[in-house]
Amino acid sequence: MTRHSAARRASPTLPTRCGVTLRRSACGLACAAVLAAHATENGLTTAAAGAEGFLAGALPPAGLYGLVYVNHYSATRFNGGDGQAAIPGFSVKADAVVGRLLYMAQGEVLGGQPGIYGVLPVAKVSLEAAGASGSHTGLGDVEIGPLVAWHHSPQLHTAAALAVVLPTGDYDKTRMVNTGNHITTWRPVFVASYLGATVDASAKITYSINGKNSATDYQSGNYWHADFNLGARVAPQWQLGLQGYLIRQTGDDEQAGAKVADGMRTRVTALGPALRWQANPASPSLEVRWQQESGARWHSQGNALWLKAVMAL
Image (cartoon, rainbow, N blue to C red):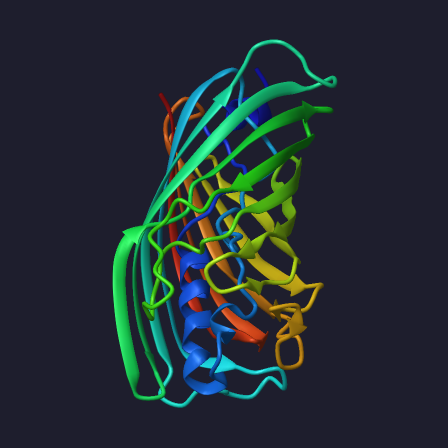
């Protein structure tokens, strides 16, 4: 077994939904305090921006794998379409624990290895905005999806999935903060990794196609999302990386068929350091990453701390 295939065995990564997505729901709700009407979902995103980094495209051999993500996000600024702070007294904090199961099967589909995954998040979100405040702890929306992974060489690995995010989380349109979004989102996903002798260059790219929120007649625009990593192995057990993410909304937000404000197209970029540890190829792996956001439009601008554990079951 090569070093790269051994690393894949204990490091399955593919798209998930977790705390970062839940705090975006809170940020959207905060805008109601300033924009009135139902602009509570502006720029709504459900992609777990920043969740993946090291070995993002290197899926493991056949078997069942468990992943646990812990995320803390905080921000004291929500930017409008001009990049300036739009909400007085704004503050949001979100903590999430996310469980994910990944099953990789035997056999071959489309020339690759088939699999399936499922995700269930639990989050606590606290929000202050324009003199109002609220908090909620509850389940987030479930994400599931089939996938196919290809191992083109010991260095190059890719995978693709078609995920669906279902409106199973806690939601009440009269509540200031929710941990569910009350929409269905379809999400094609592509991940890739180039694993050199010491270099890990990885990326995850998704496109989210949002359904309408039937409770508010609000349609959030579709958007691109990408996670990326450029890392180096600095010791047999340790990897360092520079990681980040970006979100770019491609369509306007609408309510009752009319564009909301200027379309409220969300965009944000984040960047920060990351560290990965794995005692040996058969042991669990641990990752920690910190990311600082910048250039936010219709989005909070804060920072996120991630912890991630991966283990074969």
